[in-house]
Length: 487
Picture: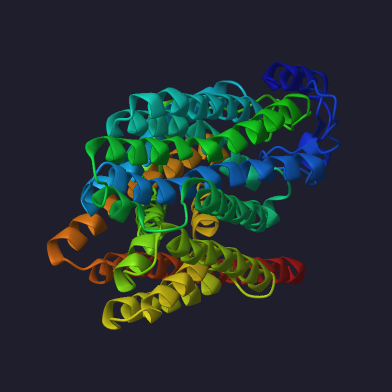
């Protein structure tokens, strides 16, 4: 499980070779072998296909957990009679766990391996799902929030490992594309969680809040709420089976180390203090953290309140019917991500994100300005425009860290920005309660799309400046060589 010692041994034995050119072989344990070679900068000479696919299958597992939150918000709001602001604490508990554990997770990964981080994350995720079963017996909102917090701890390990690992497990020039491909699997998880919620948690008939309000006796009301909470367990039974299969497969698979090497071919490390000082001086990296914070908050808020938006604009539909629009949003998200992946093979990735963010701002303006059910369809379009944001912000921000010794901690800090999912939905819920309009509260998302637009405009300018400087240096070198030849 921990390949660091094996890799170090291999490094010592091959110091005399040209590791930076041909790379080092993987000698860690695993029944399913890895044929790639480790390069000096932490990247590989090629992407090991099975390992990359198995790693990418981890991505829908946190997508499934996140979309289940959108289902739980609707269910808990009715069962526990919560305001929009209070119901948003589902996301606060979930993303708070990410924030608190990301840095400790990165230090564990630094001392061990990305594979160890994956296995710890999946195992703690299993534990968090198991805690839902006693939570349903206690039947209080706070206990459910505690269970979600536990799941988030596991997911923080999983995401801190998987996002950075996906960008590193292959050639450097394909890092952003690789992470976007892995993140496409996340969309499958979002969709899977919504489908499980629609058919296993929600029911036909009257909306749950109407059933509770129309209960003739307190005993009937208690029976309805108890049954509703019991149904929240069924999706987690499916998730548990998938997680256990993943744990076994990853445990028996040989994974590359994918960490930068020193001149003597041993792993290069940096203390936490040095790492944080270096990253804080990097202004574009800090801007990327803020952008990711706002993006995750926007994504979480948009999906948290899609069902509520549909039910507000058409009071005749119930939760199961309204969940269809959330599912449509996840399908649109997948389509938007797929289209972006194709575009990025032909167009500069920064330009793709600038276009997506600009269109996203226009869709939010439509939601806020148009007081009819077509606003729900605009929310679905907005979901499509979220598609490439997380992966591209993550990979581009990771790429601006020129000293790759700081990669694990830099990736962890980007994952910490997921805390935006705890704040932005709460802000939107509070705005909805204050204005008495769920539709108008979507204005929050307009400013988040705007932040994404500004960040990629800045990256585009930075890239153009770097290319101009490189061309100038090349021209100067050519002129210098010509003068030397004349002499």
